[in-house]
Figure 1 (spheres, rainbow, N blue to C red):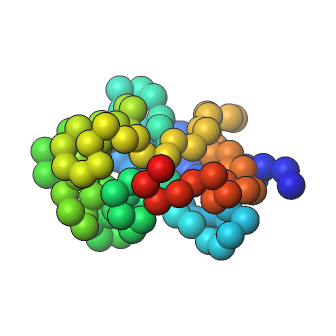
Figure 2: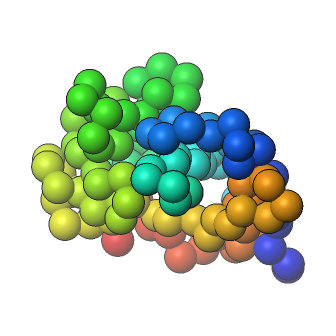
Length: 125
């Protein structure tokens, strides 16, 4: 099955350290992801902690730590680097968030989702 392309937002509306959450169908039901801008680049991740498969936003679309330097899991406080998704504090230290392919196309932030994205995505692999 071909990959899905999701237009998340206009690139010009995404400010530094701002997140935008979106939903997608990975072939096994609707899941969530988010994009975040940092230093002129855009990153995209699944909205799922690598320790416990739960969404990570504190409230709707709020993913950053109080100092806005890390992505933080609302469930248990794990901290992930924005630019790599690497967990640097708390369980599951050393693991990465699941990155999603993202690009700027015609002034829009576009995320590509493989239809079988859940097939190889265990909760703590």
